[in-house]
Image (cartoon, rainbow, N blue to C red; front, side, top):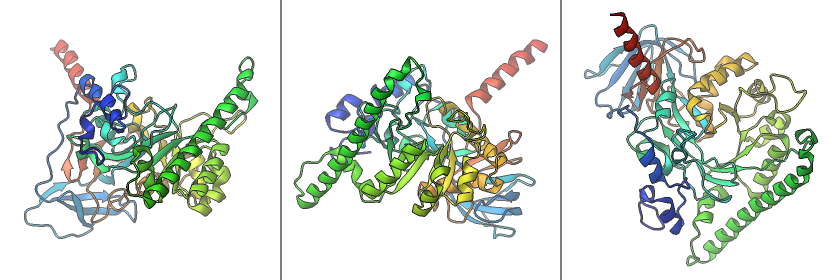
Length: 461
């Protein structure tokens, strides 16, 4: 892929050279380091669909509408063509008998570092953070490693698309996320939406003295000042981007600054701004900040979102609830404080979806996304809403509901076949399809299991 400003192939540039041209590559070690040190997956990407496929006899969980029991679904050229109790079967179609099984649309993990992180202890495989605080021009997509073993692990449990997010703990404006599907030879093949939204990390705004018992209490004022300085830096960056936009509008000859250029779609409301905010002070700041700069806001985190549910509903600000499996944020809070966030938002009419925490710790465990939704269902969320929270709702929030999130004619044929409810840990994903092509469901873990089963079988012989 060529960079529009330099006519150079962005993905092949080491970080040092890329920065020379003002191109952000999500790694202080450079994307080439990831290729050098990360071992390739044994899974071979599937070839494009060649003939029509008809899946017959399964219960089709459309998500958007009613389930179709003993239904049929026609898939051709990577898309769903028709589904229902009776459909016309083309003469050249291959009929796949899935009687008694269940078909679901692929799950979407809306907050991950998938493809950007592999092994925590190997720095060269961690490619989700750029140096510095202001990096709106960093693009997650060009750093995605299509050979990641974690991709195969997640998709084996029905997670067929993920939002890969630049996630620098020290950053403020971290860059642009990308929605990828979980199969492909290159990051270009995997891209569903190359640039989804701009991501902002807010500093700590919860200065409860209980968080800083002696001898840490002396640091409280220092942390307070640091947070204020970082918020001022964030506002200065947006003011500079606005000034740059106005200068460019008045004079085409204005020198291009790739940082502010990358922010123009967000300032124009054409691209959402994802502000990572957990506590009520952060969320309130995000709402005011978005209103000031006329941003299309999405809250990521949202632990305290129910407190401001009325405002969020009024402004139709979606919340990506991250990390249902967490301990309460405050002493004295109910033990189910995180477990019930999704249910409270649903009851209040706030648009939401469920994701995981999105750190490199979570990358190996994105396969557990359906179980996050299951816990939310246990603590008040309607089970149908829980399924939508990891399929249709993230597709709507990420702007790809015309392609993903439900079983509908015209959408991409990204779905999986299972023997039961995917929110149940006892259910098994038996077949996986991405754009109509059957994808290998084996993982590094399953291959190791098969390998060492042979060891003990051989000993018995």
